[in-house]
Image (cartoon, rainbow, N blue to C red; front, side, top):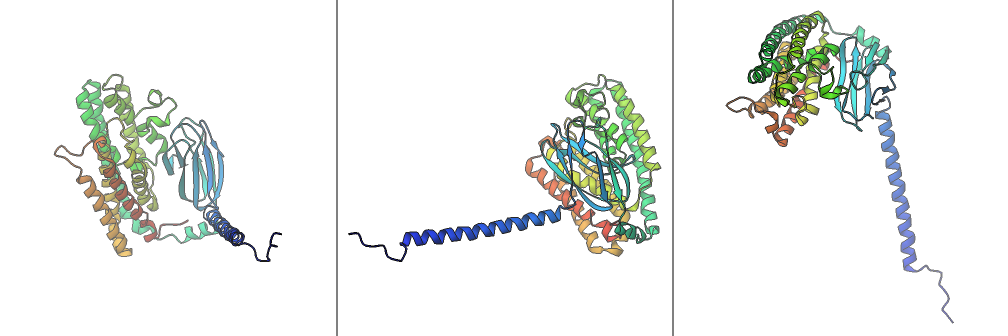
Length: 397
């Protein structure tokens, strides 16, 4: 007869039971970790507003948020790279460019109470609305703003800078237009470079003027028919004709319109008041855009590849703003000023290191490692710039 089974389970069975217990404990631990992580994410992004951009609209197209810090996740559900902007009248409050199809990007914005507009992808698409409601914190912050007298000097000097650089831009575009009208392709290509540099020294301020800056500087991506769209005018339309099509034919009306718009740009820049907290934010935004997008893609000057000239011009206006605020920073936060100078010097050195006897090379000759270094150093400078407003008591609402 078979031997009766003993009361002790076989060794294999004991190991199986023990293993199942371990698996259950591990699974429980993983579930707990995952639930805690999800809760943390919900806490961090609890106030995040999602906006989905479709081919001809955005959803929702009417938003309401409290004053102060807000995060917007912009989801591109269209088939085109798009930009998203928050507009206060004709002025850009915050923006994100080149959001790729199928992807999303976060835009953080500290907003004052009021009513704003939002763009919804292509420039021809209807705009949405953004209503920002006041809070106790925003009202308290408005009462606690620092005395503005300390910023009168820097803001006045920056106005002088805008005037002189606006005149330089008008002069450079006039020369470019004359070369185009004369049908001189080689001269027009050469004169495009200083004209673009002149614009890029104004770009942080110019990009506040949404409609006018789109006429001057919008890329083909943001138009329904791209390069063939009748709305595609301005610098990049001239660039496309001169460097991609290698002709001046048909460009004279575009150049003349650009001449008129640069005159209008100078007028509007001098007509608009610039709050002290935006003096730094406009250059910081330009440097963040350089670091996040332009340095890697080379998309800004895709036909002429003179991106480095634009980067250097952007850095020049950044130097100007930091120098205007240098006395205040030296008094309020000398450590931040040293960080700014070090970051600025590092980006300067990176660009200078690429120079040849003929000047800055075209961006299509700059390798991926060099582009990454430019991006890294631009981000370090942009992050340092972000610290200026808190150091001077200008942050918050």
